Image (cartoon, rainbow, N blue to C red; front, side, top):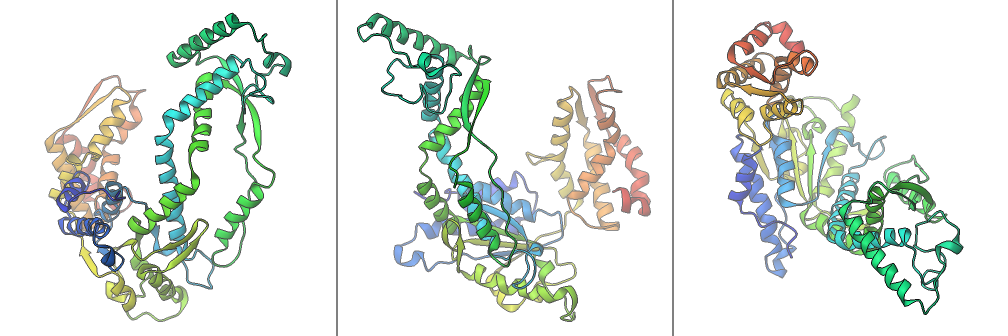
Amino acid sequence: MSIIKELTPHEIVAELDRYVIGQKEAKKSVAIALRNRWRRLNASDDMREEIVPNNIIMIGPTGVGKTEIARRLARLSGAPFIKVEATKFTEVGYVGRDVDSMIRDLCDLAINMVREEHTASVQVTAREHADQRILDLLIPPTNPVVRPASPIPGISTGEPASTAVAAPPASSDTEEALRERTREKFRRMLNDGELDKREVEIEVASEQTPMMQVFGPMGMEEMGVNLQDLFGNLGGKQRKKRRVPVSEARDILTAEEAQKLIDMDKVTKQALERVQQSGIVFIDEIDKVASRSGSGKSGPDVSREGVQRDLLPIVEGSSVMTKYGMVKTDHILFIASGAFHVAKPSDLIPELQGRFPIRVELDSLTEADFYQILTVPRNALLKQYQALMASEGVTVEFTDEAVREVARMAAFVNEEVENIGARRLHTMLTTLLEDLLFDVPDAMRDNTFLVDGAMVQAKLADVVQNRDLSQYIL
């Protein structure tokens, strides 16, 4: 079974259009890259390992959708995805994180992803087992031989053992039938929620585990995790008693039973396979580790090329040691992005440039783009503010004139002050709706609030025209 969803390039672009406005070339490039992964997995066996991903570098100003495109792409594919900042890494010999840690973090995310999928698949069985344990607590079993130590594993009734496991005479079939009818009655009450508020005492695993942190050179953070796992398990599983309502006990015991039903070896194997075949690493701010043209090799720039050199084998394809085993990066898709205001893509070392054969330039956003960003996407800003106010019982409406005026002012401020892309809309709307957000619900009694063009002009015109104020307020 393919671990990548079978979406065609046109379907991928159509899905991205629901959240990201414009940037057709970037969407086209990432759609082709994602579809090529499915094509590789369905290629002939002799060519499958020979086909390598075409890594992408996205170039464009901040706030135009670089990160959002990569994030939505990962959600569409169901692939393990991690976003890292290139500036957090340092070359070997400097204090900081090594580039291998991005692959280790990706493996951790994949493990959690696959574990959640397996948990969901056994949820029904786990709930049945949890219900049995709660019923055993409410109505202790009659046969002490089956459960010699306790009426229920992991659950305490809070009563003496003699009363909890006392068995009726073997010949009392009537009592046994009565007990079964009572048990079925309690099962129906449990499913109907009639016992939710009743408290029971259960034994649960303690959430407090010994903490250990190891400071040292490259790779030691991985060793620190393994040491913590080692010493944390020396004393066995720490358990404690808790008295909780039945509704909460069902959730706790269901989660505990689900963990028993999951084969972690299988989870680990599937997660590592998913990382190696469909993992996506998004390296943001790649331009910050590029040496500026004409700069010397002194000061803070000394480690820039070192980080690039350390990235080379990871991007090209190598084996990285993780606590789950070796992970090959040959078929992991790397997407880099940067604004490249000061440095240029050509300032990256030539070897790293060659590892990113596809370059996509993202366009700056226009007034028309801002208008669409405010209205079209499913998570449009106006819809977000309307949802916030709806929670207070207030209906906020924006006229078309007001939306167009906000878009015009955002484009103007970006051009005159600093181009921060769509993030400008956040500052504009926060300034515009500041009084409304503050007055609701104390000082405002109306259930509807209309934002029109006149209000936008009154609230924002002076700030937009005053360049000095725009630098600090917008």
